[in-house]
Amino acid sequence: EGSKFKSKKEIMEEVIAKSKMFKAMKTKQREEDMEETDALDQAWRALSQTNAAAALLRPKGSRYETNAASKAMMSDADKTYDTLARELVFDAKAQAGERTLTKEELADLEQQRLEELEKGRMARETGGDDLED
Image (cartoon, rainbow, N blue to C red; front, top):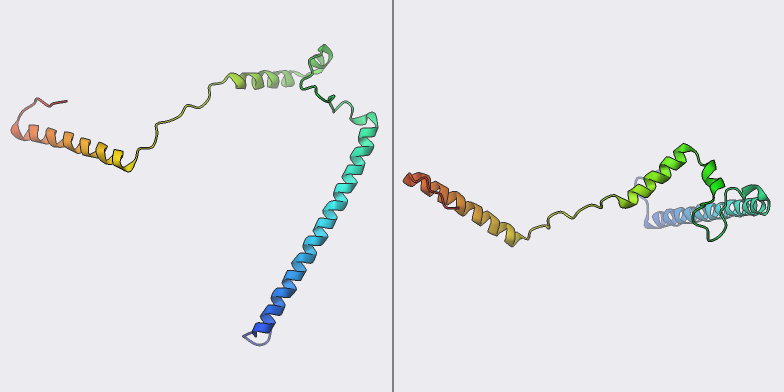
């Protein structure tokens, strides 16, 4: 670090050292993530084997609960939310706008506009008020 310029060998050694350091950090992080995932999996298995999570889980294949007991337990906010969610299905979808014109079409429109302006100018120049539309 004392010298201003480093040799090619020193630069390559630094690059290799940094690469190894980042690789080791990545491996360590991956191992920590796997340990945490395993711990969460074990906790979930323990929780699902007890009936503690039964109230939170629906039986497989049931999409909506429609029995009277579950509807009676719903709060007003839940009922309002369900109603709004069902109404959203019937809301009008966005309509497509006008398509983007090509350069040729834009040039044609500009040419037509200029021709109309020229006709108006010529009519004013000759003093006539009869513009053709």
